[in-house]
Image: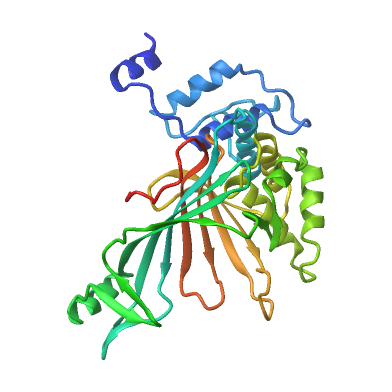
Length: 345
């Protein structure tokens, strides 16, 4: 009896875990010093499907050396990034009219609200979209989704304060209700930047497509940052090419491969973003341009190697900011849809 066929008939084709796919892809394309693994790609994919009913992929005798039976193959952060690079470079070039990035932002308001003993923190959520046409025209759209108490304790204090639906602070009004949003054309500035340096659409299209050359280009481009901060700034600039800019597929692949070789990139293992999307977590520290007293922040990215997309970016430790700044990437890519106010999620 074909047990795998029976499982498929009963439960349908399972969605492959992106980290399991990265594991097999990494094993198939591992360092040259390892003996070639005699397992066909078809068998590997079948093993991934079987992972729907198993808890791990078991690869006995992978290196040809005497090994304990049923040794479980582990995955490295480098393998995940290289798998994402392979996916990225297979994406076809797009002929669509606009590059669009749609993000959901979450950030704690910088001061406590409320009255008397009933003080509490609120978290603001906002949708943003940016469109860039191939001729350099730029549009920016934003829509506040409303503020909410940040924690259970904050919600209790908010209720004691009378559950207000609006607050007035620092010359602005916050509300628990979504706004209608706005769309505006941006003029007088270049749409992209890297470590504070402006970049045009044409410059992005001409970036190097090999990892070493791209890393060297980025290092030279950000060489005016303070001494001792270059590694973090290079990591931040390379990661920006993955999701915040219309980088060609071969440039995105080169950026992933360059990141895989940086010693300051920390692999955090399996991770899930705030919308429940599964991926792999990576973190690095960076001193932002203009930061004083050596203040550094940590950026954490959750990447889906199966699609090569960055799912979320979280920044912690930014001076003057309470808590984390979270950006969930809802869409990033080319489209023919015309610029418009973001719809509610």
